[in-house]
Length: 393
Ligand SMILES: [Ca+2]
Ligand SMILES: [Ca+2]
Image 1 (cartoon, protein in one colour):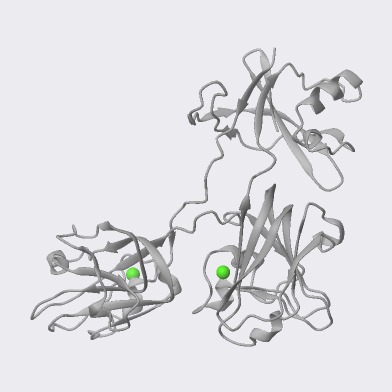
Image 2 (cartoon, protein in one colour):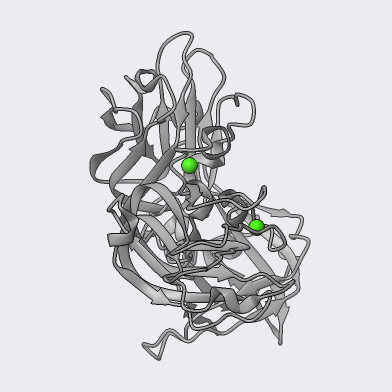
């Protein structure tokens, strides 16, 4: 008996990201040393504070336009929480921020609480909080500006690079931040070297339609000139032998350029800069396309963890369910491995119902099987569930 279930593709593509810390803040006046940036430091106990004045305001310049999903405000907890009442939240592109449209008006926020205001995708570079009227004081302990970056396949994936300059880690090229204010914590960079490269592993094979690269704003935008975008499934030469989608001639400082890749198939997206004494610096890499082409499947089958993998019948049975085999990859070797430390969490939908019904189950993994091909491994977790064994590709 075999029962086949299909996973829901667990969507991490639409998780809102707080962009507030990527910008710079300013306010109409500053009382003592309670600066505008205190609303962006991630600490609910540090707060901004204007003087008592007419129409006080606080504004955030994100340096580029976003579609703002929602804005959060954390109110002070020590006293006078009603000072925030009737504050206006504005989102827009006008540098005269008082003329930007209002997203929401605060009625009141409990002391120390964080309230969320929907801005329904209002577009803007500036996010402003202001209180109309005379003799007002504006205090903000934290402001969040949440943006959705839909369909970026690089979301929550892993990145690696040939070397790392200082704290310019590879993952910082896929953290959504363009690095306009803090490039060393929001951009990746290799050290100076021959043929530096960077790679994101999309974990599954996709048809990549386009890649968007954001160049650094702070200096030396010409360093990116000549960088090749390569896409494919091979890790030969660290993936730098995969097919070329495009070669970057140049990107102005702080600009995001789009390269179309005509649905090139691949799991790995590499950027490689041929030549000596080169730095490869990337402030953001976004990948768009269709897929994954390898669907996750969940198969229930009789499979004992003591089974011999050399038995032709066992091998044939396993490969009949293998996503690798279904992609025509035949040079597959099978080997047992140590199981992962924790329980495996699985979400799936029933094959019969067309609906995506999430079921969250935890299995204790007994053993792990690796189907190894030259460049693409498939992991199979085997757990004792009822009298059957579970086979997940
Ligand atoms: Ca704060
Ligand atoms: Ca970044």
